[in-house]
Image 1 (tube, rainbow, N blue to C red):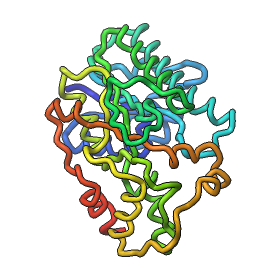
Image 2 (image 1 turned 45 degrees about the vertical axis):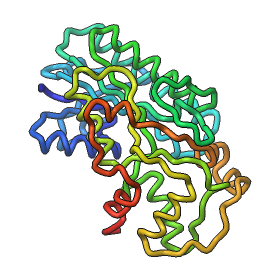
Image 3 (image 1 turned 180 degrees about the horizontal axis):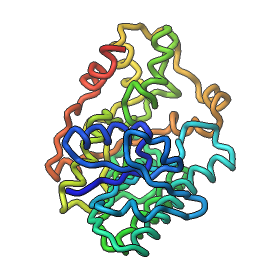
Image 4 (image 1 turned 90 degrees about the vertical axis):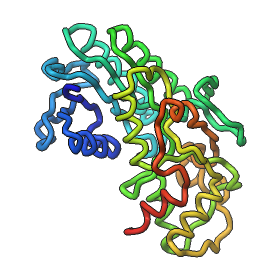
Length: 302
C-alpha cells in the first residue's frame, strides 16, 4: 500500500491511527490548516472555507482516511456552533471530492468517519446499518455528512463510512468526563440511567479503520461499536467498580443536565443500542468486546 493521507490527523483518533500505521511501516501524511505545525508528519495545506487544497498531497497516495470535523461536545450548541459542526464535515468532504475530481490520482479507497448519531435515540431497540436515519440535530448532520461522503464514489474510489460510537479513552471524551466525578465520590447515572451507550475502545476503533483499508470488499456504512452495549447506569457502575469508588448520589435529573449543558443534554439522556454484526461478518475481531475488560485496560494506570 502507498501513502495514507489523513484529514484530522492531529486529533485524538487521528493520532492513534497515525501511530498504528507508522508502527506497521506505512507512510503517512496530513492535510492541515497549518502544515508547519505538523512537524513529525509531512503535511499539506488545505482551507476548507475557501475550498483550497494543495494537490501535491495526492503524490504517492493510495488511500485517504477522512476524520476532519468540529468537536460535537466541545462547546454549547448555539446556532453558530451547530452550523460549524455541520459545515466542518460537509465542506471538508466537498473539498476532497473537488481534489479527486480535478486531479489525476492513484487513490483507491477513502475511509470516512461518520457517527451512530445517524440513528437518533431509541429505547433498547437494536439498530443496524439498514435502519432509517432519525430527524434530530445530530442525525441531520450525520445524514448530510454521509451524503457528501457518498459523492466521493463519483471519482472512482471505494468509500467506506465508519459510524463511530462512544469512544473510550482516558485522553478525552466520555470516559474521562464520567470518571472525573466518580474519582471524587460525586458520580451518578444520568437521567433514568436506562438509556443505552454503544461504546468502543479506542484501539478497536483504530483497528476498524485499518481493517477497512485492507478489505477491498468493504463498501458503505459500518457501525464501529463493541458487540455489547450497556445502559448508562451499568456503565457508571462499571467505571466506579474499576476505580474502586462508591456511587452514593442519586441519579442526575434531566433538568440539571439541561441547565448545565443546554441542548447537548440530549446526547446524554438519549441512547441507542447499535449492532456490530456487519463489521464482525467481515472477519473483524474485537480485542475488547466486554466493557469491564475495556475499562480495566484504560483505567488501570490512571
